[in-house]
Length: 120
Image (cartoon, rainbow, N blue to C red):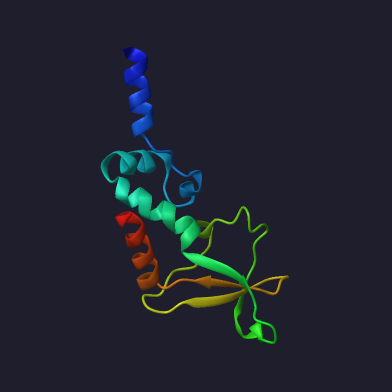
């Protein structure tokens, strides 16, 4: 019986993405997870879905965009940057040392995407 209760309890808890520690201290995260899990869900979604990275179109001059550097795209954490979404327009950056473009979504677009995932 105890094993069953322990398994049910563990199953009901969701893991918190450790990248959120860039914005919240561990106690804040624990409190949010317990009292406002939708806030944790929002910021967890933000980590991987607030931006896109794509190859620059052939012939497109991307030197007009501000430059952003990362040591590793795989280990990139948007919360470790000073980037902030604008309400209704996307922001474009060129990725240093590459022919790629980093696009920070607008807040309006991001919230729509997030809300769609919540409805599923």
